[in-house]
Image (cartoon, rainbow, N blue to C red; front, side, top):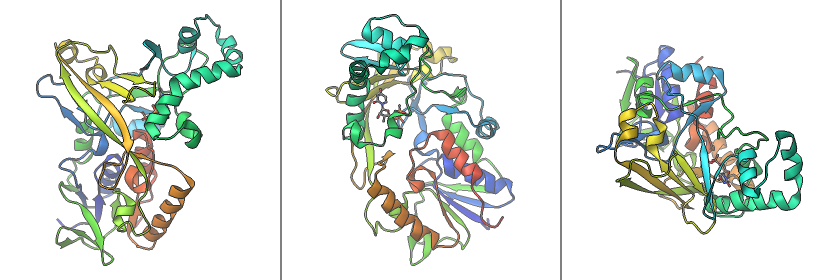
Length: 362
Ligand code: UDP
């Protein structure tokens, strides 16, 4: 087919951009370097149990943005799963986020909502809570003490004076009933879209290439790592990476919930995911005599490792700005997404960015 636009990278941002382009009448070629689309939201179904395993760690869709919720609901229906996270600390289990349930259990007290603020204003108490639930976890997650990371990262975890133990504040939450992969397959299921996997895009001599083929001279919406696109000419943007250990166990239910955080520094992993709990509507999966769990180990990133979390520092922002300046010099190139934009995105924010993008030629 003749092509009006190329989308390089078929994750959340790329698939949403491709859909918008196709719905505006353009013919779109989507190129994905991995063997399958979906980016880090990609899942694999465990053949023995039918459990949907989140290959790159748990992804829960949650949003308060009406346009994003409406958009994704055109393609999949959600199961209404509401995310709750437990924390293990010194042999006890607590409900996150920081709210009455956690405070009462941790300090062995009973509080009214109106008393919680004053109770935690006490410096020794707030330090005890921070050290138990945030210091160790954050040091493992980021490889540096909490004082050295941007405070906005820890503020992702809500603080409440109620018994609400929902991990997110967003009313709209869930997991696609038909599985995450179906969201990407349906986004790309349009007569104006052609998808090619195992196709990495590179920039050479001012032109874009896939293998030995030059891409047509059309807009390229690129969501791979932006430093890689420019041959790392100013240096590597720093990331944290993750290592996962997945196990199928002969028990119906291992931990009673989808995610348990291990907040002590001495435990080498940050959390254990148990994927069957993401589909409480699926009785066959829930009652299967086996379960699949995954331990998550954060690690220092080096070139060649999978990039998961961008490390936001003054230096990394300056480096990103230099790469974005280079990108702006190439007419027809639009860089975005988690990898392209070097962003710590939740799924909905990536969809929102793609929906609000000004398409070239409009
Ligand atoms: N965090 C923590 N203890 C926890 C959960 C989170 O210290 O039990 C901190 C940690 O620094 C983490 C950040 O809060 O990187 C954001 O947590 P979130 O659960 O949003 O991380 P994500 O699921 O995106 O990895």
